[in-house]
Image 1 (cartoon, rainbow, N blue to C red):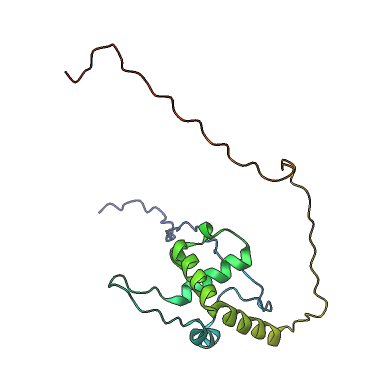
Image 2: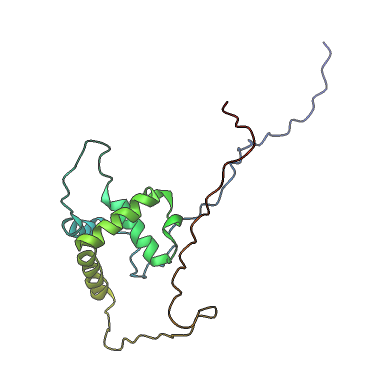
Length: 173
């Protein structure tokens, strides 16, 4: 019986599949753990905000149900914190027009002023507000392309002169 040549076997290392990692950029800037700045309302704060933001508005006709106020309020806080335009509101807060409409509704009914007062009280309890040294600064300058004096009154347009009959044949005949 002939023996076969023996070749050494190298151990096979298992290959783990590599999944690509895509960086996720949050819409809300990451704040340090000790930063008391409010970017969104947590559950305890939201429980205190709900009665303040409640707007009783009878429905005039049936339709789509009212959108949840919590993501919309977080969207308003996001706009106020970042200083961006309403059109740049991330989708996670809901439709940008709904966020703006709800903000306008809360301002019109006084609900936002009450909620803002609560937020300032919460921030004051965490950090402490010192509003004694507040000041305002501004500058009033002439508009570079502005006109002097009263605005011009629009001139009345002259009456349209009547046109005589045309000697050309009409296309209606």
